[in-house]
Image (cartoon, rainbow, N blue to C red; front, side, top):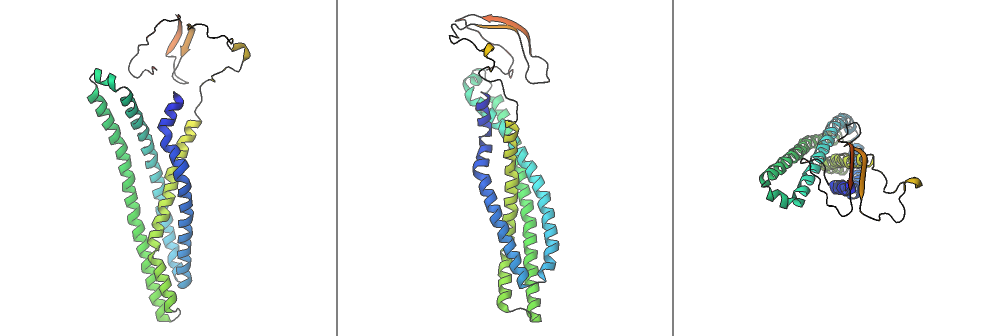
Length: 272
């Protein structure tokens, strides 16, 4: 049951690792090389552009560091709020007949809407942060175009560059806005998708339950087992997790073969 729930709640994370992350790394390398090529052509055409590149690069790195940390946390919140949404939806579908029989449809619908609103709230802030980044990258790209065009005009007046080389510099500067946006998007894509790796690693490091078969030969049942469907508990105790008090203490009971047993408990008590 735990393995089934793990795959149902983390299928999206597995999809991100298998399908999205490799493509994100590939596009990141391609876009980074494209930006480096563009800046090299502009700097080679108009050497004074190197003076402008230094403060632009500092501003660019500052925006990148501020946005990446925020975007990563928002993606983590979005992933955390998505899992309870899927879990509640699956439980509602499986127990639809019981929910209708007890007249709890409105309550379950309200709980589902609350979980959807919580998830959409995190998703909305993630979209707003993307617009915040887009505005600043557009401003940065337009400043690069202005600097390249101004330096090209000055170089033409000084007679140090030919019109063909200056035209090449300006044409490359017109594409730098799109390329800078693409680089930031890919870096953000890699950073946010790494959250899926973090979640999978967290689940994989959780302590596992006991093995299906005992390693100790003395504790293995005989080959003819089970000869009858009898279950006996002697001083049984159980807790939800380590560090908590025992939920069941010194339980001693015997369930005979062919007996029907019902387990009663409060809602959410973990009955299966």
